[in-house]
Image 1 (tube, rainbow, N blue to C red):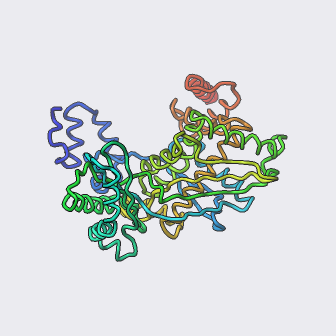
Image 2 (image 1 turned 135 degrees about the horizontal axis):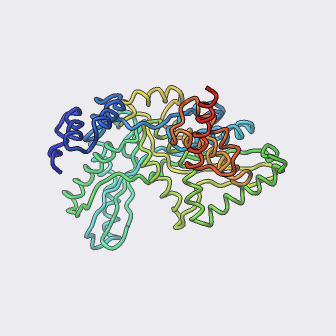
Image 3 (image 1 turned 135 degrees about the vertical axis):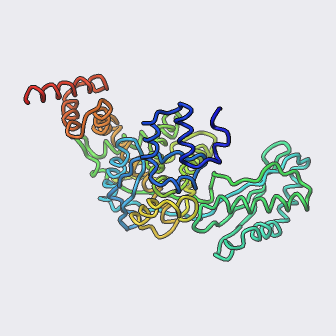
Length: 424
């Protein structure tokens, strides 16, 4: 495309000038990019061909008690009702003593995939016999993590299919998520396999399916605490458990069930500076671990308690990547006041369970739309041009109407302004 040759070599200002010179954007639109570029130097270090910072709103989820400690949890998301839902779910659990969490291990996984393997069983056995040697090669590739008490822990060899083997490394990355660290170790192991065994290495790459990094969040809620609008708490608890069961047997429902969980998890992960796409990949892979895609959480009524549990991989770190260079990430860490990466993992899992509780509770009582509509109506008001002092007026008028959409919001705003003009 003319004007964009070697675009990556241009300075930030030059890139913006090209957009204007090639009539891709107006002068006013380019100015908008400039105004939103809060820290161009930082942006240029994070991505290629940087133009501007695309901002998302950040809110604070409240009421979280996790393993006996209270937390404030920053969440970054543009969808209405997520922060409110997480806070509401956490408030219900707080009255019952809060969330409990556990994690048996914190480690990441990487793969060296071999192709053209003629005797899969014999090759698998031969490589397993080299475990000590291969782990040492991995350790030598990143000695600094070994000095900090981390490094390669184990080697697993898996037969994938005809001619294909996966040599998996399990690695303790300490406080980092460790993508670059893992890939460096894998390349070292791949080189060793090429030179000593003359194997055909197809690729060496980390896996985002981090089953060695599972975290479980759980809670127990007296069913009496769930009573609402004349409905007994036991009845609501039973309906909530039944809704959970539907997500276990029906993948169509499970997808939306898990999307609701990830609303909260992604928002907390983004605020932490971690890779939310890796988190999504791990969670959804885990949801299909037995061959059918299922809900990540389960709820059941046991005696007079509603018991909930969410177990999933949480591949995040407290150092590395954007975590150390984005100032807001550091502010958010101070707000959460977690001690380490494991503490962050437990917070994230608890947010997912709180979000799920709030969504299911709304579904089996008022319906999901009621909680969404107040913020949705604010968005409608803004979208039709309502000014700051007009937004609440538009929202109040829309709340009294049986239907709310953009055309109706525009009509309401016009009436408010006409009335204001008549009263002047």
